[in-house]
Image 1: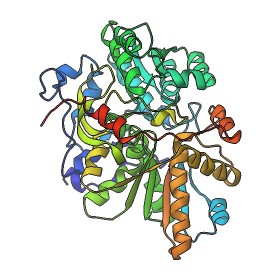
Image 2: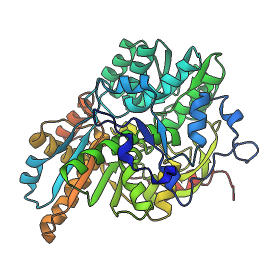
Image 3: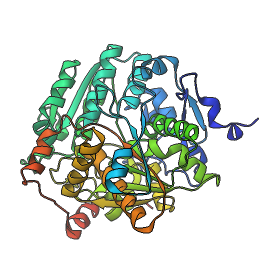
Image 4: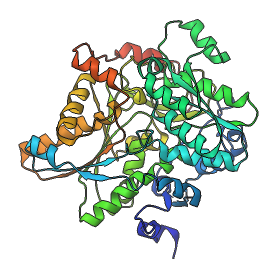
Length: 457
């Protein structure tokens, strides 16, 4: 039997947990465009990428054909501490809204990192350890990824250097301290510790930072310290691959319930949570086996899908990383200092960008105050304080459920509750005090940023 005919159910262990990641790219008719060398404008080779990333992760990054990739036993053993994660029907929210819709959410916040990020953190740390490295470097926005990676590195006895976006470093001190508790060094970015950080600060001394800035610093730290490699919590193909456990578990549970979602919703910053949630469902859609409405939800302050362009761009502000073809606002775009720190990235996963470009999913942007209103409505009836990032999905799930109420359609809605908001109480305080504002970049700001994108056919 050829691999393409093997049903996903073969890849489930006795705990109803996936024992293989699903590689969505294998079923994509149009593959994501290759990463480009910023100097030669030619596709990056494995040898070039291995100077920055772990060798085995490079192979996963470049693999567009293998549908299932086995999860090593050591990683599965780690997953068992918190997986399978709950798939919950939001009965109380349905009742509050008076909707005929069924609302399910996949809750990824039931681990100390408080989010889905641990799914890829342990995988990337495992491959770094297997390669015999001393440690890894990374960036983090709101801190979920940095927290997850610090946990994984502590578990495997690896050094962990985290560059945390400055505004989040200041807004979220408790998440910073969790990272330090697990042994990571945490530096606010941009910083004076790297050449690219000093350059960014020289040009904009008052910058609040961005994920693009922090990525530049983390990559520089990796390539200038022997025995280190850079790891990334979103955007890359390998990360979407690791996060496919979210969607696989969701599908396993829904199949057991005899349910099929009509609408699948996820927040979108770099794309790891959304990509992981939709993977097996999108695979069915690509193969013509089923149809789903997939909605990416992004902040109006950083609208890469809805207002960006599908072009090659730098993944970082310092312009030292490979070029990726993605929906982007320009690598120099610095989002406003809103509270959804994990969504403040100028670009989007090449996998999701290609799917969006080809019409397999749609995207909407929402304002910050509307997001927090939805978050509090959810918290009051479902008993979980959601992360600001996750609350973008909550907002649109509520909107879709209300549409069902107006039309009388009993649709089934699945959304990703990617993390908890217990370290985001400053944001909730600002919302409750009525001082939270909405910022939407002008067309001129976005155009100026995009004008600096490299010109590649």
